Image (cartoon, rainbow, N blue to C red; front, side, top):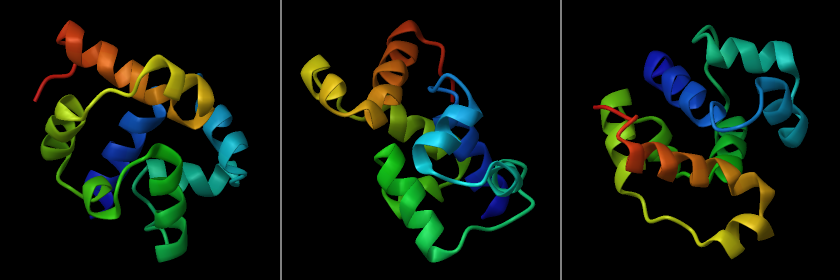
Length: 107
């Protein structure tokens, strides 16, 4: 779980300005967040739920093997620009859509 989770988490974080930005928005300790990104720690059930709520994915999705997670992100419906403006936490979805349309996300 840890390797796929950390790769999926890194992918989701890549749609933000920085890891520091994600930590700030989530109000999460940066050193602990880095342990999740590096695959050195497994999040608790509560922390996993926080990640899912923040990034707009389900628990079973973020735990998928990385290639399956990439495919899932590619086919996910795109929110409207009004929805993106209404929720700054979903700005990564717009970036995901752009990458999928440009063929930059490969499986």
